[in-house]
Length: 262
Image (cartoon, rainbow, N blue to C red; front, side):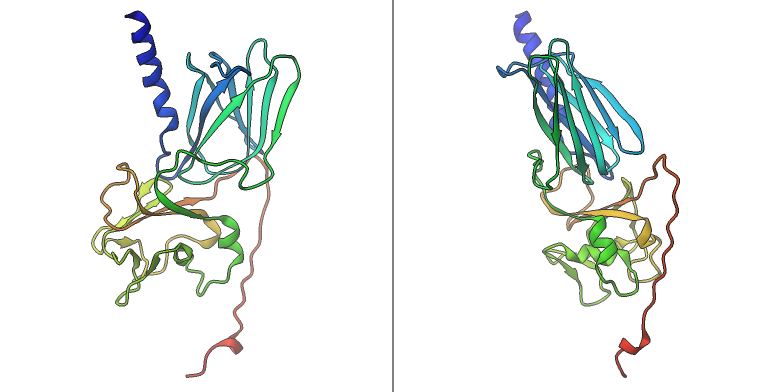
């Protein structure tokens, strides 16, 4: 009876580690095992980020499972795992996208050496906990693709299946233009009277293009945490700061010679 109760509690504790991340944030979760595939309890998992230092420190439970939710999306994450009798595991150059929960299976080796995993390819790690139909419009697309009027939320139209309606130009998911939900850093920013993005078609956008890091556009099968949406979800994340001091200057010029004649 005690064994069954222990297994039940272990399962209950390990399940949340594989849940999807909430709006506006990301997360890292996974299981730590020895070479034989047995769980490694009480392993120390340290998550840090370039120019920001240590972000989170967690320990694995009796099932070897750990969870670090509510992480700021972005690149440059590092993950180090240490346990008594095992060599240190060190994963570098991890990138977390908004709404993503990166699920890792970490195999520790016996010894005193350090195992380093340098993630250099975008497809090296797969988020196998993803159940929705979504796509991320990243920083490179926002900064380098041409845009008319620097209306940053127009980049949402890069997502397959998303278009404008023929009346006000509202974002349309699967033909639904008046039932979408818009989040800004996890907070609901939907304009409730017209059920559209704040200022999308009637006033100037309240968000500078330079302040937006990325969009997660969820077009179907989104979880109940979003709610109040029959169309789709636009999950916007603004840029975060670092411990480094720097400045950036921008100059945008639009040549009138390229304007169409009336």
